[in-house]
Image 1 (cartoon, helix red, strand yellow):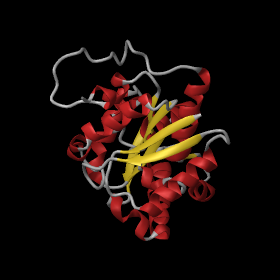
Image 2 (tube, one colour; image 1 turned 180 degrees about the vertical axis):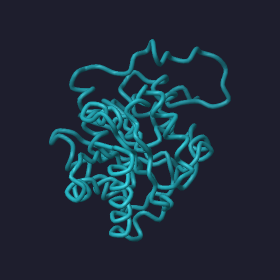
Image 3 (cartoon, one colour; image 1 turned 180 degrees about the horizontal axis):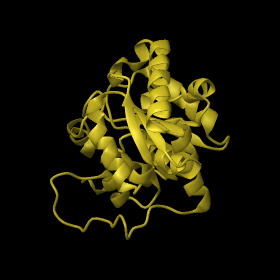
Image 4 (cartoon, helix red, strand yellow; image 1 turned 90 degrees about the vertical axis):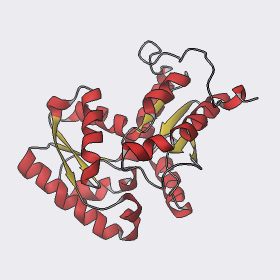
Length: 244
């Protein structure tokens, strides 16, 4: 199985990308190959709709290219599901984002879940994604560590401790029975946090690779009734082999 993982941001370092490759290898099946690519035009990180949208065309080109190159599926790493809906419209292969996969899994293992995010500006975007999945009745809260995405890797221990503190409040004060790490920059931290807090903690990398693999193995993809192919018409940009 070949999967293309797309970073819809430009600020990922080679060290970060290598760490993610190792995480996909750890959490994925032995026969799965994940190739990670990054957009070249857009924002260094995604912390607003503006950041998402200025990189959208570049992201969607990489999605379309993946299908043309014969990939079995596409992962959009962004926890906020950046460009997920238009990406699903333009290809037939499965497209999954880490936020969607994480929340679907959380809904199956707990009656109440909380998201642990980076900064409070993300709250409205994440709440909209919860609503799209119809999971508001299971959503206990979102807690934040007040750290920008590009600062997460500067002090791993500080980040994990902040997540543990926020997670404990979500459990004790908000009634969470399960925690979701609501940023792909938190990938790889879940096991340590779960050991301390003694509740299920969903890792975004583990969630998205396993959910995506399951769709490919079942031979199913997003419904084209739900995500219809856009009608042909003149557009001022092109995708993949349609570029002349």
